[in-house]
Every structure is written in C-alpha cells, then in structure tokens.
Length: 158
Image (cartoon, rainbow, N blue to C red; front, side, top):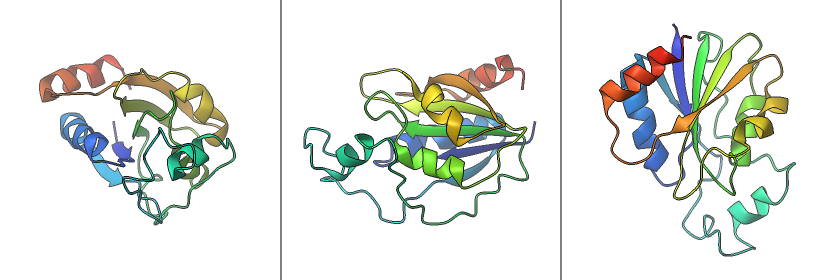
C-alpha cells in the first residue's frame, strides 16, 4: 500500500491524530493549509457571522488553499483527515478534493470531533472526488495508540 495521510487541522488536534496515523500506516504526511489561516474568532461556531459559520452555511463555499502541491499522483490510498464542523467535513476539504484527480484512488476518512461522529461527511464529499472510492473511517480522538491504528489500517484491507 502506497499511502498518504492528508489532513486539515484548524487548532492542532487533527494534526496530532494525522501524525500518529501516518507513522502507524507507514504513510507520507501532507498538511492541507488554507491560504488564509483560521484564527480563534473564525472558528467561533456560536457566532453566525464567524468565518467558519459563513463557510459551512454555504454549500458552494470553497476556501482557497495555500498550495496545490500534495503528492496525490504517487499514492493509491489517501487517508483524509479533518475536524468535524456542523456534522460534516469543512468545505476546505471539498476545495482540496476538487484540486486534484483522485480517479481510481481509495480515500479513507478520519476525523476529530468534540461531540459528533463522521455524520454525512462521506456523502458530502463524493461529488468533489468523482472516480474515487471514499470510505468512512473513524474518529481519532484522545490518546491514540499506534498499535491500535496499525490494526485498524490492516482491517481495512486496502
């Protein structure tokens, strides 16, 4: 398996999970960065006018990426990680998927969340990666054990 762990992390929580997963899966690591980083006010989900609230209320929102240099072409399996926002993936994940050709690739989702599961994340991302197989993965919250993650990856039979 030639794998890449690509992740977006607004506060650092998903970054920690991605790093442990990359080590466990023997995968390369790539951070999805927004052109304009999110600050604390942007992430205030209780403020309907915050950047994240505005983006998530607009299904066509596609926040710009800092770069489009992810090594997608050289990998068959992409573990795609993000924090759960409003029960789905942040719209920057759609931007990322729409910036590359994922035809024939397997995308395994993983997420971090303060209170919800993966929800409708896979369904909301399918149209952004036509030709890819998108699998619901799991939440990677709290203390992560590399051995447990290795076992999870092997159970996926990728």
